[in-house]
Image 1 (cartoon, rainbow, N blue to C red):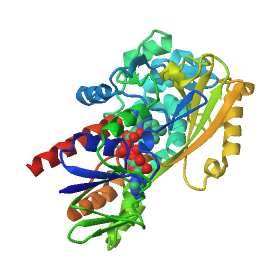
Image 2 (image 1 turned 120 degrees about the horizontal axis):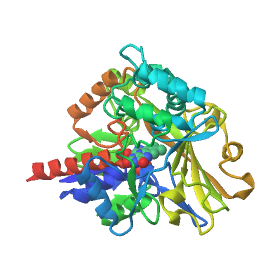
Image 3 (image 1 turned 180 degrees about the vertical axis):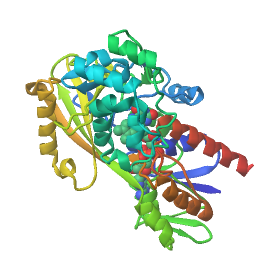
Image 4 (image 1 turned 135 degrees about the vertical axis):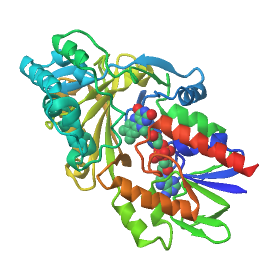
Length: 427
Ligand SMILES: Cc1cc2nc3c(=O)[nH]c(=O)nc-3n(C[C@H](O)[C@H](O)[C@H](O)COP(=O)(O)OP(=O)(O)OC[C@H]3O[C@@H](n4cnc5c(N)ncnc54)[C@H](O)[C@@H]3O)c2cc1C
């Protein structure tokens, strides 16, 4: 029996690392890693979107950390939210005293006396959970930016239980300036000492038995076996696991029912532009990640890579990435690399984060599939899609294959569970 694993990101490499069955990974790009890739240039290391290792699932977290052996360290999160020229500690509701007094008062008052009715969409959930003050000052503008989608058109099933509601006493304390930590599960995180998040990929890749890169899966047929082609070469498999985006998988198949094609078309996602900057100044910030809700600039988050690991920048210099979520054709997507670099440098300079004359390295990376957007019909559409793949017998595993907001830990857990099940079925 031979299994074809479509895609060579974290999920595929994890599946391969635990599979006791013959397999081949088919990866479209010249390198594996997908969303977990890092670029190293002129001594600066940039992830293609800030990635840290953390999980509530201790077993999975330990599995990832064990892969890295000595190449990891533990760091304390110091994330901030940039509001009205101030860098408010994250979680925001635990640092209201950092706001101008009138905003602090507004956030506290509406948190304590919140008349909002039970929510039916993501925007209502924000108002219901945090009140009008925190919603207007931070959460609504920030979420509009990161999702690049109207929060009132998004479902809320994914946030319930994910974001804990802080006790009222903590919010009162935070408004008075008494320190509270709040939401703790990412307070400490792990990160590779060297090589960026891609180091985890390198380890897994070095263990994989067979990977074919530069193989863009374009056509899949089911005869007696599965036949997978990139338009030049055909490969035969007894079973298929797909970790590639489900919309691309559907395109590669023939005779897909209209209902399934329509459901896939209605799934929403957004893309990511990462602007990477090397700065000739030491320790430009003690912040790890800065959330930027203001519409004055297009990026929604800045990650200070050398706060993840000092090895991400040469001595005396700093590395940062600015992230933009975009959809095809909108303002920042239409900007060419030169324009978006200029917008980023000017924006960071205006916000007082860098001095633009210090920038010594600049580059851009674009990713088509970055975030799953849970629009209101998501659950209905994804059920149709998953039922179809169950029926034809292709296993879906991973962030855009399952079309779920899965972080690395969830991808690894699901990948290992799948390998275990297939190993058992073989016996
Ligand atoms: C900005 C950002 C920040 C994140 N931060 C964190 C974080 O801090 N912590 C965390 O735990 N998680 C984080 N994540 C999530 C994490 O990146 C994903 O959970 C994980 O990388 C998904 O892995 P995957 O293998 O399922 O998918 P992908 O990484 O998307 O891999 C899919 C692979 O399939 C390949 N492929 C696509 N089409 C084809 C085709 N037709 N033929 C062959 N191959 C194909 C792609 O090239 C890619 O290599 C973040 C994600 C983003 C976007």
